Each structure stands twice: as structure tokens, then as C-alpha cells.
Length: 159
Image (cartoon, rainbow, N blue to C red):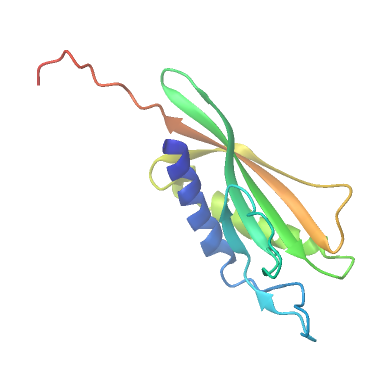
């Protein structure tokens, strides 16, 4: 549950960071000109593709990948995956620009704390794929978050 709340808060931060960033989309059949739109924010994984559905690109996908819990704290690895579309060969720059906006928002968090609960640990890592599926471009960001481990309530205590 805590991990779901973390990714929900992180999706909100990403949405705010890229809301005014218009990126190209794949032209629909019959359209001469590509439409521009802000990346859609997706929880977890891209939905299965169905015929007639609009293309998913551009997108920012947020998902918790793994975590470690000890007695005092929980560490959660969260991926932020950026996908863009461009028929230009410098289309990877759209991914870098989206990543930069999100990174700036993350690094601007007061005290590196999101939603008064989740502490961002540095470094923030990012990487691109050597082989990009042109005209689609993708970049992966890795963030690490510290959360205070919930403590069980002693059922035997008399309040």
C-alpha cells in the first residue's frame, strides 16, 4: 500500500512537470499533420494494444520495481520510463527533455521529500537504449526512495 501511494504521488509530480510540454504523436490515418500533446502519465505498465486505439506515445510510466525493508526503513526502487515519438533522427532529445523536466522537479523537492513522506535518495540514474525502435524513443530513469517502515501496534498494550 505504501508503495502504491508513493507511485501515485510521483505520478502527480511527473504530470505537473510535463503538463505544458507538447510532443509529437503518430499521425492517425487520414491525418496529414501530427498532433502535439503532453505525455500521458501511466501507472505500472502500458495497456495491451488494441486495434483502432490511439498510440500510447508520448508517455511517462511510473512503477515500483523492487524494495527492501528492514526494521526502521523501507527502500523502494521506482522506475520512471519516458517514451516519445518522432520521425526525426534526433527524436531521442525529446526523451532527454522530458527526463530533464522530471529531474528538475525531483531535485526541487523541499528537503528531497515527496508528499511529506517519501525521501528521495541520490543519485537519480537514467539511461537510454543503444537500439531504439525508430520512430519510437525510450529513456529509463531510476529513483530510490526511503520510507519509514510501518510499525506494528502491540495488541497487548492497554490504552
